[in-house]
Picture 1 (cartoon, rainbow, N blue to C red):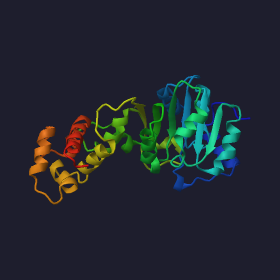
Picture 2 (cartoon, one colour; picture 1 turned 30 degrees about the vertical axis):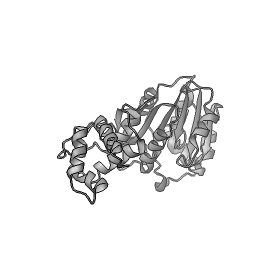
Picture 3 (cartoon, rainbow, N blue to C red; picture 1 turned 90 degrees about the horizontal axis):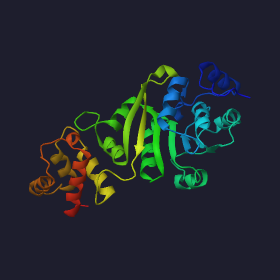
Length: 294
């Protein structure tokens, strides 16, 4: 039986991989964490206890899963790679409150999974070292589906984490920043060097915590239309917001009506999309919605 708490060391990770004849699949973005300190920071950021549940996505060989099992009352880990299932079964054998689901999280019915796995816990957080190639689709699925989540604590590409936490005015700030901040409050936990993984990725990583909001910080008439206005505003970053919005909403008209609506929203036509706050986008989308532009 495995000694508890030692999966994430380089020696133990290599031993498990070799014993099971496991080979990494680049297409699945597999990079296993081998640093106890980083794992501790992830676990601390999640704020788990025995009354709470944790959903992990992409557990790999179970280094983070084991730590979650020691902190949380219930853990469900979703793994897409069937080759890892026997390894997880072995290393997680001491933890009967851990359940491994074989599947693609993007295709799973998460509301159903929550009802089945987490019905008797006081709160649930997602805690994961996410595959970088599907980070944004996974996070937006988690945020958009209205799941009863407290936190999402994930290791992702540093550049993406910075975009999610960005404030208006900088080059990192964009439609992803606004979407994430509409649903949650992001906070960078730590930057992670590529040397703490096997194999080492080509990019720097970061741990980010998204504290999921019970209600959005702004009131919008139509969520889908709000995000449509945001995406249209950022269509070409070098253009003014007026030019981007004209292309999307007034392609055959003059600028007069557009500038009238921008004035109503209190927004100068010469501004660029990255200078507008979440609140300003809410006002703008509501003005456009009231004008019948949906």
